[in-house]
Length: 157
Image 1: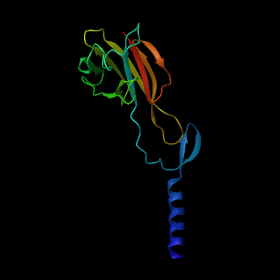
Image 2 (image 1 turned 45 degrees about the vertical axis):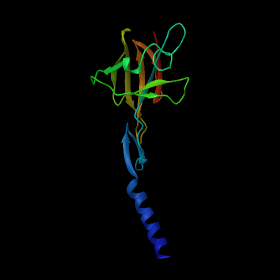
Image 3 (image 1 turned 90 degrees about the vertical axis):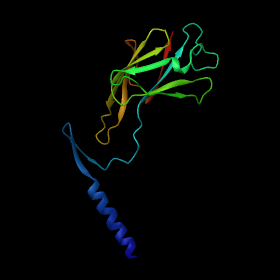
Image 4 (image 1 turned 135 degrees about the vertical axis):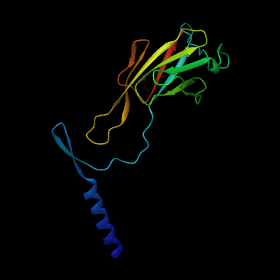
């Protein structure tokens, strides 16, 4: 019985300590601690296809280009690490992480380079904001706004 009493006392103390006033834009609200979760890194999926046939240009077995022909750079880093998402055999693409707002340059072999601008923003809830993709533009043409955390961009060559 003593353990139950101590647990209830501990629980009440945790609730009182975790509730704090948050003043945002003149509005006062009660916020508890933000949950301990792993924030998902925003990524963009990039698929390069033939503009006439829609055939994958470098990730299918019959494609004319190899993965080593793909070069990805950004306005933040000279070299960007990317991974191939090959879970769906008919829908393979390259996943490029974007931890901050930046412009990526995607170049496949001797083909012309493409520019992908990723703009990140923080959600604006009163409590526990998260990073999200605000917009993506491909060669100065907006692809989405707002976007999902794993938005797919298709480049047609």
